[in-house]
Image 1 (spheres, each protein chain N blue to C red):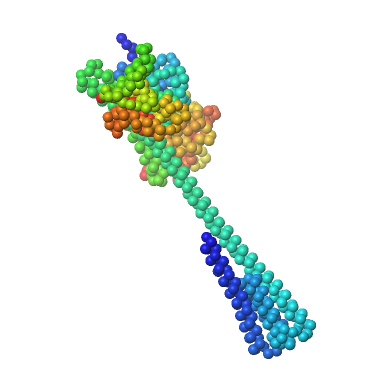
Image 2 (image 1 turned 90 degrees about the horizontal axis):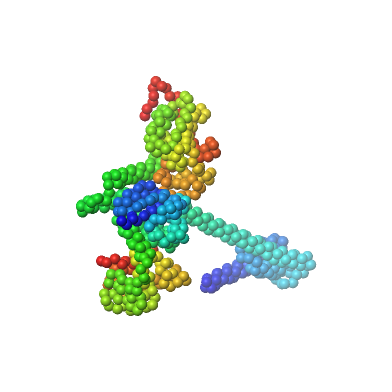
Length: 406
Length: 234
């Protein structure tokens, strides 16, 4: 470090020495030129020329070389241009005034100009420093926000991984336990054990569990694929003019085993127009909402499905249950992938048999139709009401004589 | 006729409880099922099961809380079902008083073996026989009166701490003992974080009692959890 300082100091000294040399040489040269060409030159012109040189030296090398330039200039002015020329003697009092004025003006102007130069240098240095700081700040901000985003996406990834692992492992655990129970039973039969470990009912039950859990795994994987497609923006709707009644009844019949312990009420407005939608996809939305409603509300309560016309261009549908409801602050998050609410306000890892993807998929489908989906409290202030809208379609009116199918 | 041992299965996953009910019943156990910790505590109070099998993640009262509350009122063997990757919760459950764990997915044989071990342990612990002065596991013998330890009839010299550690292991055969529980039992409460300490002593003990310390027969490692003393004949 000290070696570097020494170098800087040496450079500065060398520069200042150059300033002194230049000051002396330029004044001497100016004197020579003015003497050769000037003849009887006006002392004022000489004084101004010297003043210019002093200013120049001050601007280039600072105050000390400028003082030297002023002093050398004063000597030359007196010696060569103020009568009697060739001596340091000044005859006339007015020339004394001229000489002293030159000296004071030259030194003062040199000082001022040098100070201005220093200020400018300082300002430049300060600006550079600020720019540097700003750049550093900007870089560190960028790095910080990148790190944050990375961390967030990593946290999200690991949460997703946990959810997926759990959803895959739960059915696998039941399957593995069932199969090993059956294997155990087979072994006992081979060994001629009597009575055998399982009776027919038990064997049947184990096989049913395996069957159902295999289906559950398949549903889960199907949901993952669907979700991946929606997220990649690759969802291809097969739109056609579909009847809302048909969509609802298809969903109801598919969900009948899920809702058998609930009372389902359907309220469809009369004369609902047909809508240009992907009927299967919308039916899937209604099915998932029914599934959720049944899962999150006690047996014997009512699940209500409604469909009404909302304005000239939309149909609004809703599925409502009489369960515990969802806290206001969670109403957005329930549409996140794998989010499962225990509907008691906290994020739960509890084993509700859903895949945690139903609402995320429903949202994807509704939004692909340019509709909106949201969660409200039930009409009595209790329970959950999921409302979604669907545009009727392209501004065309369906003509009953030429139903468009694509 | 001896009455059937009672097992309470606590899990909120209905498919798994269906299987466990059938699987355990077929092996002569009487089984009841609870879907969460709270109803498990109720059933426990009315029915007095001989062993509890519980999942960890459940609504209302979860598995950990269930272990804690059961330990306040009973010494019933508790078997925890946990998933791989839940080591921390597993250790917590064991420290709260669970006796053993099975990692999901598991085969019914593994669960049955753990259930048998748990019931056997509970039986010896509650037996009214006078306390034994000689403990035996395979070819390993401890005479409590003379503090003499022999392996294959050859005497083994143990330091006092090694002796205490081995004794603690032999008094809890088949049970998973967490690092924390072992350190607290042998060295006292101030040492519960000193896992390396324990590792050194277990290493020394294995050199003295195991035929092949690299693949031990008696003191088995339960990765990231603790150790288990295996007293079974081979």
